[in-house]
Length: 155
Image (cartoon, rainbow, N blue to C red):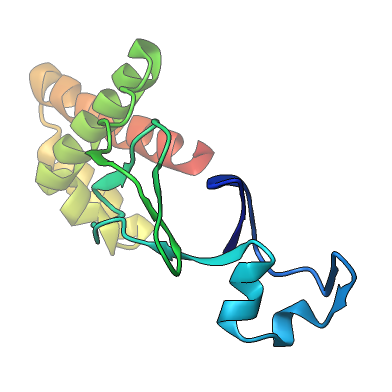
């Protein structure tokens, strides 16, 4: 990167030097002293090293300093702000999905039917459902498993 300097101040920054300037051809091929005589100074970035995952350049102008042989720039570094929280409705859906997942993972019913054949599942149901309270419990666990599977299938 280069800076164009005129009357002791930086006029602009550029990614590369122009090939022709002020009647001079081959500006990039000139030595550093000749480039500076035309007003082109290399830019040296003195921004401190930082972790891009946790920090970022601050939203303030960079500090620019003209030296004898280069232009020095430095940026302030700041912590990145935390990510915006999910909207309440989205967070409620995420929380509900997590609760269903935990209930499904903790259910012996789900473990029993994961790898079972249809006949084994029916036999398990017949052995577990012996009265109205056990039928309600069994249906409740199945409903939770179905709700979780439905949510996962639509994501």
